[in-house]
Image (cartoon, rainbow, N blue to C red; front, top):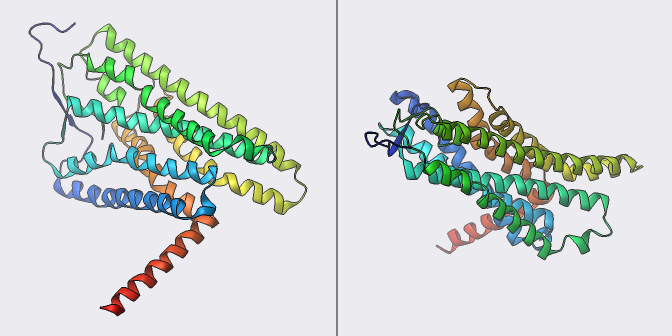
Length: 321
């Protein structure tokens, strides 16, 4: 309990950012480029999928939904990182910190659930192609997506509500680049409740990650088993190529997330904490549009088509002037 002479901190100061102007600018420029690319790249994918009727399939519906979530996932942290880099007082209010944690984890968990649903979609498409159209209907796709988002936005609520009741009466220097559960919990006044909360957070995240990894792993075991039975090498290549993008995104995202949230009592230095956080909060979302556009022939062709139409339109507009 908070004693009468304790004053609860109402803001935190990020201590992982460089405090020199030169260092801040060096970090600001590439981060701004990456964020701009993430927003633009994902908007292009969403727009292309919406504008092309032949892309109105479950796979592309899930890809465009993932792109939508990626926009909000990165927006929950990167804009605050950018403003912190350019401000002298790299601070965030307690309420702002709680909101950032909530939206970062809710969109992140939604993505985890969606990647799991995408693995199930690939499994059905390859292992049960005859039943696939009747099982994976547009209604089922919407229901799966809504279930993923509901799971994502409900799961972090108890943790956020619990953290909001903790007293923060010691140091307010947050050793991270954004608000996350463990760095914030380390600033709570030392009491049994905070220690129990850290253990609960570890277990909750471990269970979420392990369940998702196991479901995806089982889906791919079934997929690989079926692909290996295909007689022609060309048939095996085409079947596997449909899964490569999803598998790459899964390994990139889950690899860095596992390093951060499956460590239990293990601790990293501030440098490695920051590197791992950048991997799943910035770099993974940066590569996702590249993976889904460069490795996907249909999306590449659709982008080229609309880019060509846009150039013709601008040329005609210029000629009219």
